[in-house]
Image (cartoon, rainbow, N blue to C red; front, side, top):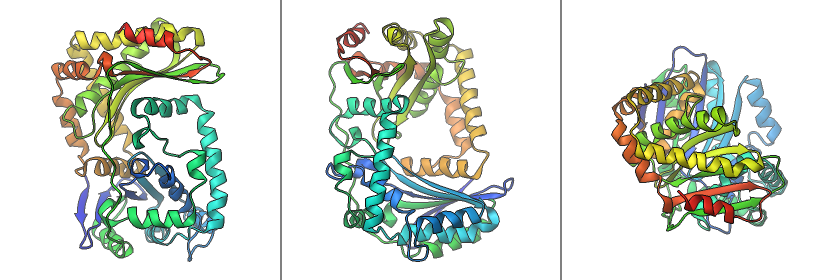
Length: 422
């Protein structure tokens, strides 16, 4: 269970007491990410995230911050996505006050020094190259480029070499001032805490947060009338691909049927894709289906890594599973098993303070109305086989089908033909 309160200054604070743990996690979330950026400064959200750990007046160097975290016996990290940015610190519960002082210090008082900006630019360029050298990860970027093209939803979160070169300390300060406002920020505290005390301490630490008018995310344009294919030529050991369709956002009432649909198709070792592609045919070691739901848009697709000569064999198998789940209702046994699997995975994933913080924080930043685990279980239990089939028919349409491929292929015609047969 958790409690959500809005302080007098407008800051949202969510507390998640956990009696059975000895740690506490503080998560600061900001409702801004790469989808809020201009094309000229694509990647600035992620760049700013890096710079928060480069020093404050009180803690002037990266080492000062890292050494203090180590000295508390904790760890810290941050992340940037299409739609939000988060900073967190997990420590033994008796170190809560010190941890709150540190995370609020980097949030409000990061120096954003130009020399550090120049050094970090090189670090982020190396991160970009590392992502591009990892096809299992980079294929997701190719897939979103195919779906959304030249608009924020289609740009890489990390940016490009050209846009990263334009990020300077003054641009970072401007972005921080405009985007990191109380309207789009909230704090989650999860773990072994006294809720009332934690709330008062967060109120004191974040009392000076500014108000402002932020740059909002533009509506995502989705104009597709026929199947799409995008290939990225690379001499890889395997062909990596994502095959799937446009879907819908987190506020759509079909969110839970879609989550179960993806799980039935490729969410576990008992899933249809695992059975058909890996177990029966031996075509792939890694295969899974996912449902990505952003605020106003989403997708459902299947990833696979296969031998080059098996790509054309595997794609029709996946398409056939899409067809089957559209045409034939899911059995009561399979639906029940998928529901219990999903609920079990969620329950097992929430045993630590940071997992609880991420769960509640993710729900809050996406919907503004986080559900308890019991409420999620209830929504999962109410999904019917008819809703699964209706959702499959709404998503898996030929005209919204997309295939992104990384491998030694210069000609995409053979892949386009496979999609036309769907």
